[in-house]
Image (tube, rainbow, N blue to C red):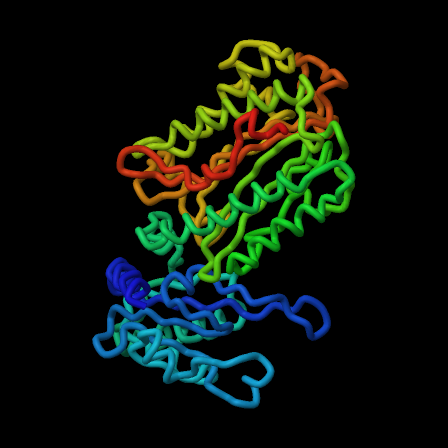
Length: 435
């Protein structure tokens, strides 16, 4: 719990005189009276480590008596028989470090008093429909009293910029957890490559991957696992995983685990179902691999996510010209976006408690520079199909290229001297992909 206390201390300091209201996630109905497995709100978890639904955390830098207050479901044996043990009000204080805690039902009566005297209120509008009316009512009461009292919160602001900037830079303990998520995820990809053969269904490979996640103690997949054979790989977020894997096709697997404390892995590998690349598959795979290695090499302090993307893009476009899939000047093709029917996404995203983790990529006109502790994915790809029209002036795609979808993705942490590839244990060399 000391790690969460340190995070709260930094957050409270950054808030200045502004009070923050950070709700937990609610339970979400799947169908009828059945609910999805609970997944905590990442901001709430980051600051509290409290893994129950419906709770609300208050951060009150303007108060000396209670700077961290939790509202939680009280212990209730009848309810706990159905949904499991609760920590309750006492546990919120003794185990999770709250200065004070109250039953959740008391939030409407107590919130306004706790916010009294704050210079502003930090709350994410539009995300928490049960709590938002209470926050607005408390703020409205302050504004109504302002002519008499001379004091009111000056505004309602989002806590996201402060909190997400803090989450973007991972501490040593977070990096260690991400190494564990990367280890489990990489092992699952290695297992998948060993078992894949023509005639299997995509979901049979998915089952091997996700079984390994669970056997290793992870919560489960971090996102809907993608196992896409042949032309299915040209659908970026393909998750049906219902087709049969065919000899002569490639299979693209994008899968990573989520640990019990929500840190995630995110790996993509592509390899031939039957164990050997065709000439066209090998050419495109080698090109994507070269682009990915160039982008990984670019990850270093002072670089930007845009610079990492550019490193991959230039290799891809130059190689596509050499293969006859694009025609024209390298810089002109990039400026015109003439490659986007073959490569239509960015080269990566932040990774952490969320798979597409929080944090700005640019501030106004300036791209955010990479710093030690940041973690991003590096995942260029090529997707050759008829789904998008060929831009005017570019060569028609020969049939021999169509249906090839390739992506290679690693999780890369920025270090003081460069970078650490957290997922290097998942092989990606051309020779390793064949058997």
